[in-house]
Image (tube, rainbow, N blue to C red):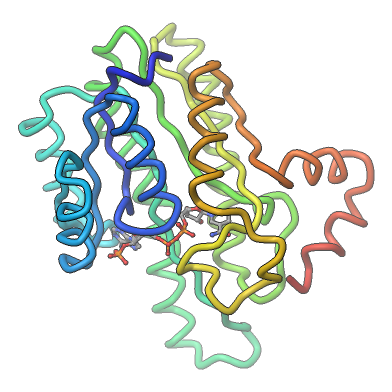
Amino acid sequence: MNLARQTVLVTGGSSGIGLALARALQERGSRVLICGRDEGKLAEVARMVPRIETVRCDLGDEGDLDALVEVVQTRLGKLSLLVNNAAVQFNHTFPDTDPEVTATNIKQEVNINLSAPLRLTAQLLPLLAEQPESAVVNLTSGLAMAPKKSAAVYCASKAGLRAFTKALRYQLEDAKLNVRAVEVMLPLVDTPMTQGRGNPRLKLSPERVAREVLTGLAADRSEIRVGGAKAFGWLYRLAPGLAEQLLRNT
Ligand SMILES: NC(=O)c1ccc[n+]([C@@H]2O[C@H](COP(=O)([O-])OP(=O)(O)OC[C@H]3O[C@@H](n4cnc5c(N)ncnc54)[C@H](OP(=O)(O)O)[C@@H]3O)[C@@H](O)[C@H]2O)c1
């Protein structure tokens, strides 16, 4: 894929990995639109990188999601890369949490992390299919293979997104569309999501992630494993029990 001339939507592009991806794609010459809930963060990105376009959208809200699709259709007019990056992660244990709080968290995590990427894919696929080369890029985690105990719903949402990406790839191949389904599997990355979590010495920078993702996209890879996620994938194949123990308490 030629990254110098794509038209891109990065969900959650106002922070962390999404912002690094948006910047890197824009610097290569692509037109980039990002979305997020916090208008202040979006305005800050627009101030720092005026070429990145922004739109406020809460992906957990169906009306906002439909409005985002309309912005892509009308303002951009075309789309060749849909980067499903936005996600939230709540730490809570089912036995110790008020069921009503758990229910609210479940709704948010599943809506933002899983339902929104699926719905955006469905609603934007016709636009993506109009391009000579295009891709749906879904961000997952080593936790999609081996969950950690503190974030059960997050891990389930990422496992779901991983399975969806593979099944979508089969469907796109059968339909002979010029749209690829790409899974980006990440290790621990230094972003607001992981602030105060995990070993700081093991965290990759979002910029390093963006470089590896762009290299993978340019090479038309369908599964892009970044940094330690490569070795983790091999370990999971060879010794799944050991791999699960490694992530269980992270
Ligand atoms: N950091 C890691 O170690 C790591 C590891 C593996 C996978 N990942 C994955 O990488 C992706 C990016 O994570 P990150 O660490 O960069 O997170 P982050 O820094 O917390 O950024 C999340 C982005 O998503 C946006 N967002 C959250 N909820 C949203 C909603 N309802 N509607 C629209 N936008 C929303 C946030 O903006 P607002 O808050 O303004 O909405 C923000 O721009 C996620 O899919 C995550 O699961 C991260």
